[in-house]
Amino acid sequence: MYGRTEHCIDSKMALTRLACVLALLTVHCYFSVLAVMLTTLNRAPSANEFEQIELSCLIESISTVKPRIEWKKIKDGKPSYVYFGGQIAGDLENRARIREPATLVILNATRSDTAHYRCEVTAPEDQKNFDEILIDLVIRVKPVVPTCFVPKSVPVGQSAELLCVEKEGFPKSQYQWFRNNEEIPEDPKSSPKFLNSSYMMNSATGILKFSDVKKEDDAQYHCRAKNEAGMAQCAPQRMEVYDINVASIVLGVLVVVLVLLCIAGGIYCAYRRGYLTSQNQTGNNYKAPGKNEGVDYVRTEDEGDFRHKSSFVI
Ligand SMILES: *[C@@H]1O[C@H](CO)[C@@H](O)[C@H](O)[C@H]1NC(C)=O
Ligand SMILES: *[C@@H]1O[C@H](CO)[C@@H](O)[C@H](O)[C@H]1NC(C)=O
Image (cartoon, rainbow, N blue to C red; front, side):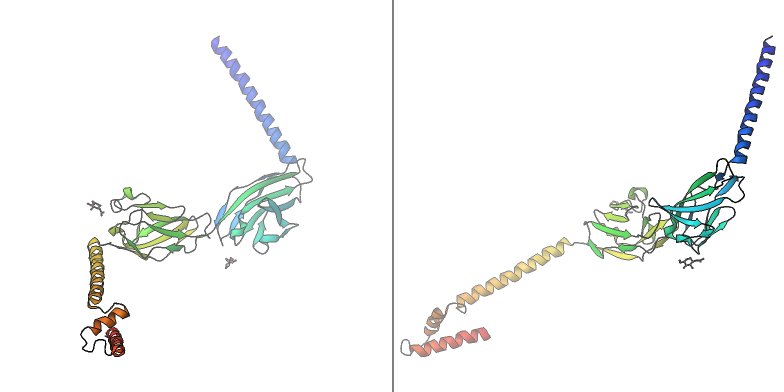
């Protein structure tokens, strides 16, 4: 008895299922006959610059014999025609063609082709007489050689900043730094070779910053800019790391002090001997050994002046 009930339910369900399938088929047929329906193989295609790329727009169902097909490009919210009245127009003129029925093939993509594109098909003889499909196209651009800045020489213990900039790449370049042709890991702790180095690296900004330059950081550095389309790198440049030698600084200071002492001593001696006293005193000093004191005052003055001058000449 129990089994029979189950059987009954089973057959009821089978019938319901059949009804459903039939209904679905009918709906599908209805639309197949009276509606234009589009589909695409790829809603978000991408290619490198100067390559070929297709924006597929397939007509899944249509009954209109000659539908109207149009393509619009939407960049920064502004639409413009790229295919209209059977002609490639605007930005894509001479660079694209239509592959039946509605696929747009860009033969030589450029960076300015990155945009949204809309395939629009109007089929007047269909009940549902319009359909559209939106495609998001990305054209990747290879990085160019980045501009790199590496400080020429840095004293041990100081900070140093190495810069790397590349602006053409799309999507935006990521950066890698190399020390003597060996890639510098983002985290110095991850490699025994870089364990002692004090750097921080930012692969998004290209900045490699040492907070405390070590002797081992003295090396050739170069940077690479990289994205999905390719890579480019700058030539290696040396960052020299020099010691600030405490002994030589002390020696230098001592030498300066010594020189200053000598000069001071010299001035003092000169003063004691009277070379640098005022003119009146000079006269008196040179009068002292003279025999004709007071007799020929003017002459003595002359003599004093003469000697004074000659001392400067010496
Ligand atoms: C694509 O266009 C670029 C410049 O717009 C040109 O240099 C290149 O030769 C073209 N490539 C092909 C395959 O036509
Ligand atoms: C890092 O520093 C430690 C201690 O100063 C030293 O023993 C080690 O050899 C250094 N490692 C490298 C790779 O220079």
